[in-house]
Amino acid sequence: MGLQVNNLTGGYSSVPVIKDETFDVQSGELVSLIGLNGAGKSTTINHVIGLMTPFSGSITVDGIELQQNVRQYKQQLAYIPEMPVLYPELTLREHLDVTMMAYQLDRTTAWKRAHELLRRFRLDNKLDWFPANFSKGMRQKVMIVCAFVTDARLFVIDEPFTGLDPLAIDDLLELITERKRQGAAILMSTHVLDTAEKYCDRFILINDGHINYEGPLAAMQKRYADTGSTLTDIYLAMARDGQHE
Ligand SMILES: Nc1ncnc2c1ncn2[C@@H]1O[C@H](COP(=O)(O)OP(=O)(O)OP(=O)(O)O)[C@@H](O)[C@H]1O
Image (cartoon, rainbow, N blue to C red; front, side, top):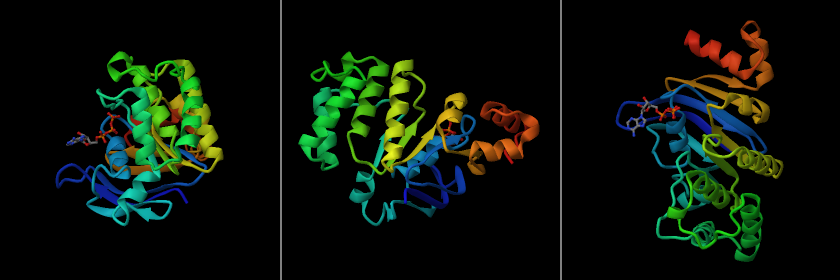
C-alpha cells in the first residue's frame, strides 16, 4: 500500500507552488525527492504530513486520507524534519514518553525499542538531558529515535544527510533498510545524490512544482545515456538544461 499522491496541487497562498503532482511510495520502498532549491520538495512533504491542505488532489497513506481520519492518518506516519523541533522544557525521556502516548504504543515494547535506538545513536546516557544541552546533530538524532520508536507505515525524512556525523548517517541508513524490509514506505528529500544513488529504489525529480521525471536509476541511465552514468552526472545535466525530461 504505502503513500499515494494523486493530482496534488497546493501552496502557501492562492498561488500554487506544486502543480498536479502524482506519485507513490510503495511499502518496502525508499523513494527520494530531488530538486533544486525552491523546487517544491518541502512543500510536497508539508502536504504529505498534513501540515498544509491541498488546493486539489488527494493523499492517502495505506488507503487512508487525512480528511477521512486525522488521527489514524497521522499515527501511520513519522516525520523527521531537516531542522530538529524539540520541546525545550522536556527531557529526552519525556520526548519519548510523549511520542509513545501520541502513537498509542505499548510502553514495554516501545521502551525496549527505544533503548536499542538510544544505544545505536549513543544517546543512552542522556535520557534526562534537555534539548538545550544537545548539539544540533544530537537533536537530529533525538528526532530519529522518536520517529523510529513508532510503528509508522510511512516515514518522511527531510534532508537526512546534512548535520549528522558519518556514523549516525550509516546508522540511519541501516534503520531505513530494516524498516523497508519490514514493509514500511520511506519518502525522503535530499541534495546528497551520491548517497541517494546507493540506497534509493526510485527518484522523483521536481522542477518548479512539477514532477518531471520519476523512476529508478537504471531507467534514468538508459534514457540519459549520453550525460553520464551516476545520478549526480545525470541530474546536473538535466538541471543545467532546465528540462528534467
Ligand atoms: N512559507 C512559505 N510561504 C510562501 N512561499 C513559500 C514558503 N515556503 C516556501 N515557499 C515557496 O515555495 C516554493 C517551493 O519551496 P520549497 O521550500 O518547497 O522548496 P525546496 O525544494 O524544499 O527547496 P530547498 O532545497 O531550498 O529546501 C519556493 O518558491 C518558495 O519561495
